[in-house]
Structures are given as structure tokens and as C-alpha cells.
Image (cartoon, rainbow, N blue to C red; front, side, top):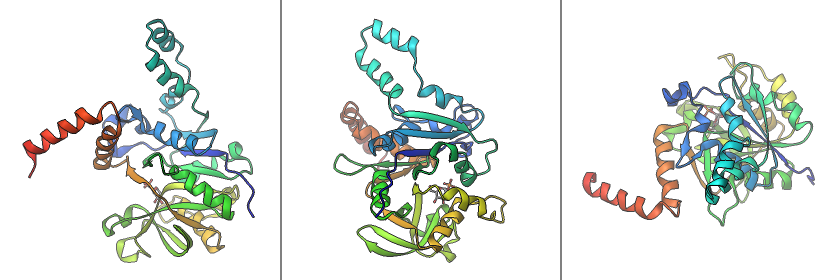
Length: 297
Ligand code: G1P
């Protein structure tokens, strides 16, 4: 029985965010807000809600703003304190104390698997969670955070676990695709996993989205994995080695996932999170109803 606890998380955040040009020329995509919080904060809060205390963000050049976001802001805090703006002060202080944040720079943005190798000194030989910044998973108060559902699966079975979601044929080529057998409630033993197949080559409609829990042996596996024809070592190919060894599980998580790297879903996330915000819900709903009456049909 597995006894190793997952205490650390890694967030790869070195990508250029080209799908969000021009804003990403100078603002990194992890800082784009959903309502008032940067997408990265949602990811960090999900990890923290899952009991993770130490988080490594793998950044790159031009991403200094991410470190600043989690740092103290003494001038701002002093001003808020002086003006008696307790509510805003609490928001600022919350960021400063959310988790132990660590940052390392990937030297060249050559992909997800290479980025993960930068986490080796941080995790040592402990298992760890990986959360991709484009994937936001909303769960209500009765549902465990997305990554916690995977951590529970890993801690119960001792097997690395990836998040699985059903997608339509039109979306198959955007994700890693799996061939798997159901082995428990929402749990699948993965036989094969392939990166972004053409729809004619799909195994199923089950896609892997950006949540993973792996053991530290993933580093050696990545180093042994040959690059794809495009020259990049795919993280998915490293996972395929775990699948070959019969050690990879999929967890069909509960919750609603948004691809914040896609403009339409990013806008949908903003609308839905605004409707969940107690201070905004009522006037925003009224505005949307007005809009539907005006432009609907
Ligand atoms: C990455 C992974 C892919 C995974 C996806 C989930 O792709 O390479 O295997 O299915 O994240 O969002 P990307 O979205 O970076 O192209």
C-alpha cells in the first residue's frame, strides 16, 4: 500500500501565450484575470485547497511579474492599512501567505517535458502534482478540488494518475488521448496514451487535461524518452512508458473545466465566475438578461 504523501506541486508557466497576442507581448498569460484574479491564482488556490504547501512555478524570461504577484507589497499594504481599507488589505495579505512559492526559469521554452526536469531539485525523490495553467477546474463546496481527486487516487493506489475528461471529436487533436479500461468509480487503467492524434487515429473520446500526479522516477523516464518527429520530447510519451509498465491511472474528475488558453472558453469562464461572485451575481445576471433580450434569437 502506498504511503507516500503528495506535498509538492509544480506549475509549468514558461509558454509565450501566443493565442492571446497582442496582450501577451508584455503581460504573461498567467496574469490574465478571470473576473479579478489572475488565472495562476486559481491554480495555486486549487493546489493549496488540496493540502499542498510548496509550489514551484517554472517560468521563463519576461515572467518576473509572476514572482512579484506572490511577494509582499509593503507600500500598498501600508496605504490600505492607513486608509482603513481592511477588506482590500485582507485580499493583498492572502496572496502573500497563500503557499511557499518557488520559481525557476526554463532556459529555452522547448516544451512541457523539458520544463518538468527543472523541478528535480525541488521535489527530490517525493511524488508531486503537476497543474497546467491553462486548465481551470471549478468545483463547488461539496466537491473536492480537481487535483485533490487525483492525489487521493495516487495515495490509495500508489500509481501515477492523470485527469481525464470526455471531449467531442472536434477537440480530439488538442489533447493527449487514452485507451483505457474502467477499474473503479471514475478510475481507469491506461493501456495507451498518445499526444494529440488526428481524429481518425483516436483510441477513444477520453482526453487528458492538465492535472497529473507522478513519482520522481518520471525524471529518468523523461530523459530516456526519444523526441517526437517535431524534435520535442513529449511528456505524454513519458507517460506512455508508465502505461506500458501498467502503472498509469486516469481519474475522470468531478468539476467544470475551462481552457483559459482559448479565447471563447476564457470569456465563458469570466461570465460564469462573475455569476458565482456574490457581489456581482445579481447585477450581472440582470445585465445578461437585458443583453439577451436585445440581441437574443
Ligand atoms: C498539453 C499537453 C496535452 C494535454 C493538454 C491538456 O497540451 O501536451 O497532452 O492534453 O496540455 O490541456 P497544450 O494544451 O499545452 O498544447
